[in-house]
Amino acid sequence: MSTPDIETIKSDDQILAMVIRHSYSPTKTTFVTPHEFNQQVGFIVYPKGTTIPRHRHLPQERKIIGTSEVILVKSGRCQLEIFDNAGTSVRRVGLTAGDLVILSGGGHGFALEEDTVLVEVKQGPFVAGDDKVHF
Image 1 (cartoon, one colour):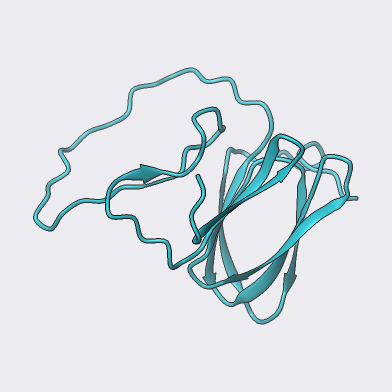
Image 2 (image 1 turned 90 degrees about the vertical axis):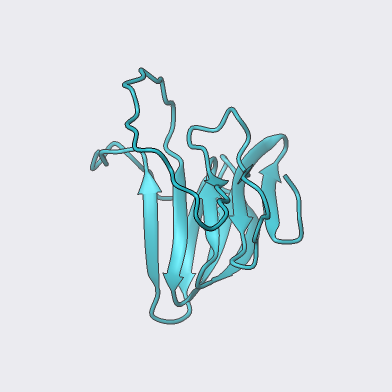
């Protein structure tokens, strides 16, 4: 998906990250991630007065390889640096409150420019020592 408010960052043919700016405001339900992603990220649009019926989700066995993350900048400002699988810097992106980033491949790092709160969503639980490598 490509709009002025959504940037897809790639290395070769691999999507490393998607940055969705706080200004992105779809008028209809829109999933921004490709179907094959480990996590689906969508914006569900409902008109006023809509009721979402009570429901629960049925257990589904899924095989997930890798760890993707969804980061929401709750407050503050930071620089996100995206790396390819070899550890080479691909892109540096400034993020501000309300911006959302989906990290789906390669590596990443953050430089905080002011006090910042990030909300992180990923597959869990975190496995200390086996879950990440610093480079």
